[in-house]
Amino acid sequence: MSFITSYCHLNNENCSVNGEIIAERDRESEDSWFKQLYKSQEFVYPKFYKMDTLSQSGYLLSEMIKRAQPSLITSYNDDEIAMLFANQFSSADSDLRFEKSYKEQGTPSPALFVYTLPNIVLGEIAILNKWYGENMFAVLPKFAPDFFVNYIDILMSAGTKAVLCGWLGITGEQVNVFVFLVEKEGLAGNEFNTGNLAQIAGPGLL
Amino acid sequence: MDNLKEDLKKQIIEQLNLEDLQVSDIDDDALLFSDQGLGLDSIDALELIVLLEQYHGIQVVNPDEGKEAFLSVSTMADYIRKRKAEQIA
Image 1 (cartoon, each protein chain N blue to C red):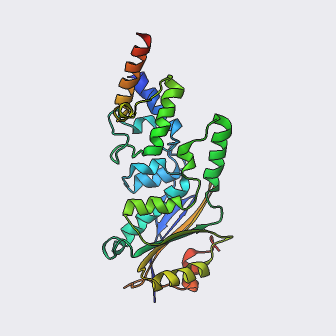
Image 2: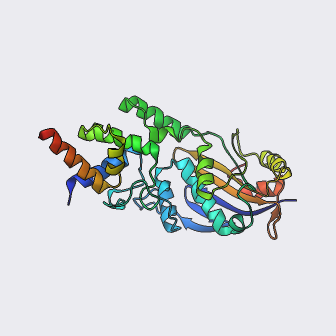
């Protein structure tokens, strides 16, 4: 049996951890919403500013999960933590920006090009945390609890003990991000099944 | 205020797509390729080489020279001034 031991939601207006709002967007601020979060949570990782918004969202919420569930850092070997992320539009925002840079500047931007794959976000998180477990980024028509449950069952049966999961809905100005942690042994948490996952994900994703 | 350093900061933000950063967020002497600075990597080094050519007409052909030039905004400014002086001389 596995458990959902922590989860975060991020939308255009606020960010919550385990159902409790920890930050609300200041529409008057000159800073972007993600920069507001980065600063308010006092994260220190200069690479944040280089990332595209997809990777920024994954970075921010993975850091929040680590704070909410310190066992992720202390309880596992570096190859016992896997990552399973998904979204609907892959890295479309960065793809379009890269195409624009190609057309308007005459030369493509390498700094944009490196983010034209969605699984780069997994690389960013893995490099930062030195996690060497399995990782996969899927592109799905919509958030699918069954997909996460089935895939994580396979991962858990092959030695994985914790899986950081996420749905990174970043399209234009729309932000709908949900990141959650599944652990094989959870002292407290919701049993990991499709019903509980759907309930925690909330109506905004289903 | 050193206009060249301010211009360089704006150009770095533009060239590297660091849209969330402002000029005031970058210290003159912060190490560009360190996690204590901007955390740049080898891809960004390519962008800085392009930047020097596009904005300042300077080609970096010696990799060792580039390593020293790209330490910080201050060293980049020093490098530009030195190369421009050489061009005039």
